[in-house]
Amino acid sequence: MIDYEYKKPESLDEVFALLKNCGSQAKLIAGGTDVLIDIKHRKIEPEVLISLRGLNDLQYIRKEDDYHIGAMTTHAMLEHSELVEKELTALQQGAAQVGCVQLRNVATIGGNVCNAAPSADSAAPLLALGARVVLQGPNDRREVEMADFFTGPSATTKKDDEVLVELIIPGDMEKYGSSYCKHSRRKALNLPIIGVAGAIKLNSDNTISDVKIGLTVVAPTPIRALPAEEFLVGKAFTDDVLTEAGKRAAEPDCCMPRDSLRCEGWYREEMVRVLIPRVLKQAAGNL
Amino acid sequence: MKTQTVSFTLNGESVTATVPQSWNLLRTLRDHFELTGAKEGCGEGECGACTVVVDGDAVNSCLYPVMEAEGKTIVTIEGLEKTDGGLHPIQDAFLNNNGVQCGYCTSGMIMSAKALLDKNPAPSEDDIRTSISGNICRCTGYVQIVESIDNASKMMK
Image 1: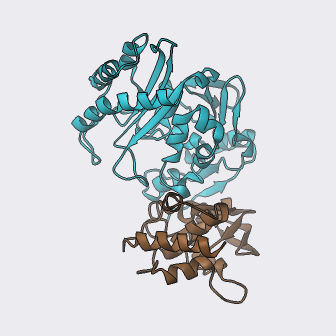
Image 2 (image 1 turned 45 degrees about the vertical axis):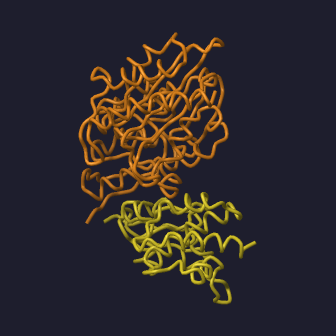
């Protein structure tokens, strides 16, 4: 019989107090669509669940100088946000392809990031959009680049007494076009074989001013395709250049895809080569 | 086992239940309220047989902690019955279009369809397919189910 206490604090201060009192027996829960399954499979056996769903003020999508997204914002809210669709297209596409309607209605962006699955649908778009996570502790607040946040499968730099409260995407991204491709067997209830997101800014002479590429399921964590990005900046936006970028991203100094139930490593490598040019063209189409 | 009392609106009535804090909404509906329309298929949010509507949104009740139901408005398949005991138009449409085979997925399918049609009275086929993308029918009667929902949207106009 699985049994735990369920706490529903209404402020962050209450959350920190509970975390301090309960120590390692406690687990934070947002939408719960990953945590509750882990409990069911007894991967984790917390004595106390601390729900963040009472923190209604962590549910927002705002554009100020930067874009601010509250950690408790659901995937459905991102999927249906006109602002996100227009200006952060890759993130809208990622959110809209998580699981299914029922899961998107409760699963949160903060939870998806903290769960740190190598296949997370929000991760590649957030990497491509240059996002930072905001971690709030009992005494201090710090920002971490998305690319530095993930440290391994299900592992992040978040400390046990910290709560991920917000994601920040630089306001400059409004000048980029972005796109996400979830390469999977089915359209719903499926994890990606690989996920590729790109954000691109072009100069008036059609050369690439800046580009960021996020990849999932090609390494133990979601990653940026830095060798491909470095190659692309300053080059002409042509098929040949994009093809070469795909090849560079598939090299072992960038991707190390493994064989898994969903597919073998060589196929993932091949799809990196194919999908990077495709996604960057779609991203440029969204400029 | 630590219990707690939760209060919410269930199929139009104010209810309270004193249940273990670790129970999910599905177990509370089935074991406490004896509303067995919502089914447990996978218990992991993969099949949709447990779908109910919470504050207008379709959710998997197997992954919904009952403690989060406090103050919410919840509708299950049992809440679709009209006051005169007649069927809801979506239920009628499923019967008339052979949208039911073994029936295990049906209550979840209908609740997903209800959440869709309440928000979008004139859905496209794509909208309908997306709305039931979290509901698995292992009889694979999807074509008739999509037709049923399309037919319901027309009858409800």
